[in-house]
Length: 125
Image 1 (cartoon, rainbow, N blue to C red):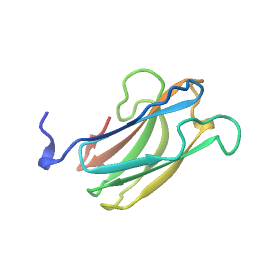
Image 2 (cartoon, rainbow, N blue to C red):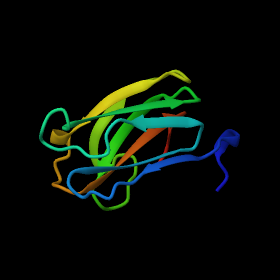
Image 3 (cartoon, rainbow, N blue to C red):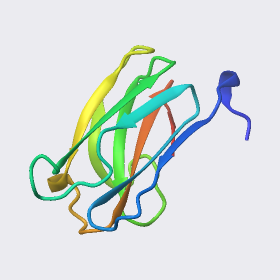
Image 4 (cartoon, rainbow, N blue to C red):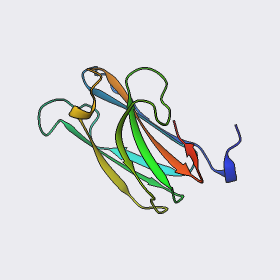
């Protein structure tokens, strides 16, 4: 599929062999992006109950959201909202936390996906 404005699709996937409250982070952007996180597995015991997610995008975005899905097909507006924000300038590091209390669908492997909105159109997933 052709992408607008010559943008490139970048994908970063982190898979874990664990199955208890595991984050499966798959980040798809139709633009230059870097996404990192500090923990693959979260649970109910501090400090292991929080995962810090950071992302940087090469284009200015109007809105962003991060969704956690347990099974099913990820999409903007689908799954548990675990992070969101308004306008972010290009190449600015954005950081937020995902906590075990946000993952309310039970134990399992959650797919964490960041979506960005540019010009009224959602990209990602």
